[in-house]
Length: 309
Image 1 (cartoon, one colour):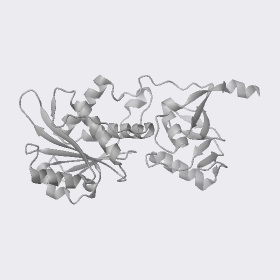
Image 2 (tube, rainbow, N blue to C red; image 1 turned 30 degrees about the vertical axis):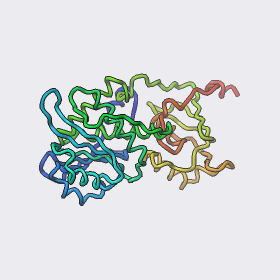
Image 3 (cartoon, one colour; image 1 turned 60 degrees about the horizontal axis):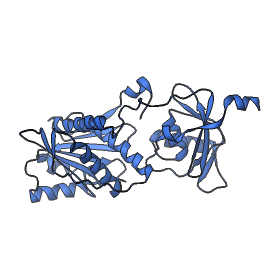
Image 4 (cartoon, one colour; image 1 turned 90 degrees about the vertical axis):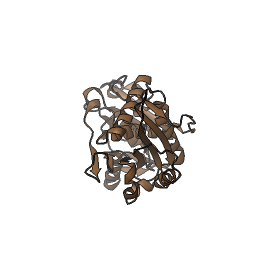
């Protein structure tokens, strides 16, 4: 998703399904190569939204209301195992009588864990409470303890959700832009991935070591990396692995270009494989979404050393 220089600003495809001619929704948004789904709809559309199975999944939701005075909006952020049931409960109890608009964030595969949903909820609250534009109904922060890999996946999902909150519906868009601007100000999430991104050097070999796998790679073309034959890669594919990497692995298996290692859970790559980025190469090797720019290290030899052998 991230790239260098001008590629970092490359347009992203967002698919929006409008279920109503009204700009307030209901609408369903999906982002290419992402697990995130965002649904926005007005409060009075809750009976109609029940027909969409996505809203019955585990996820994060926001209740949004206009307000007077120093704040533009009043927002309640929550998370639930079944978002629809929680929204119906709020409606029956009249806990938040002023809200007009609802935004729901769920995953395409309906595999969001409870701790990840709690993390996403807290990230939304963390950004909103620092903004003067929004009054947040719930302010207590209680971040769950996530494994580093899971936190990386959650952060990527968080960024994708911010992108999806923007189009079509003005109130959700205002909340999303408030969060994004606060994130930039506090550098909680680096939305401009080109800052600090190291350029790939053409005369060195990069090494990846993690969870028993080991791979060497070199700079190919542009920002792409070539993972060299002989690499040991993780066999099992985590649900977070980007679709492009999943499809590439399937083609390699079908072509017999990977074989099982003596060590359980690993495969050996028999050919060189070009990946679209440092992150893509790391994802391919690890079998899951990673923070690839930090995982590739310079090997203790260069291409010139190899040619002298």
